[in-house]
Figure 1 (spheres, rainbow, N blue to C red):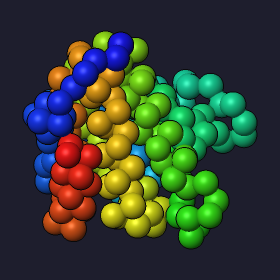
Figure 2: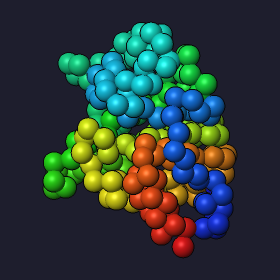
Figure 3: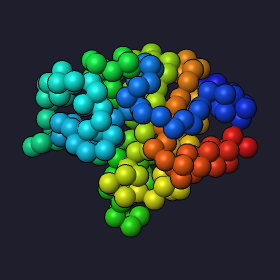
Figure 4: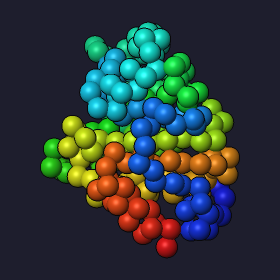
Length: 187
């Protein structure tokens, strides 16, 4: 549903936090996963450890659409949160940075947008995102922050029921990049 949302309302509904995403009591946290959805390093590994083995079992039950691919890059899937304070985990796969000429920005935007769309379809009111693809996938932080801010603003403008979006930064550089990108978006 399209709504006219002021820049100040975007800033009211989107918050940048430095926190452990696995501790947030929100409707859903987003897992920056790999295509298998069977765990990995970084935030993916942390989410799987915090949720417990039931998350891995739930991910194994998601159908493979190709060998070892349950979620292609840019798409999103949802499971319960199990041992997490979050009710759900939305798993998405961001792109590996390959210099910027391989469609990375389109794929990263799709990862955010598909996660947000899935949250809206499920009637979720709060969601927390890590800085997708900026860790071991090597996406430049400032460019990734611009995409995150654009996609979150897009969702906030469209879905009045999305009350709170947390952009979770793993360090001060990411927090500053997200804050700057969001401020530019909210002008």
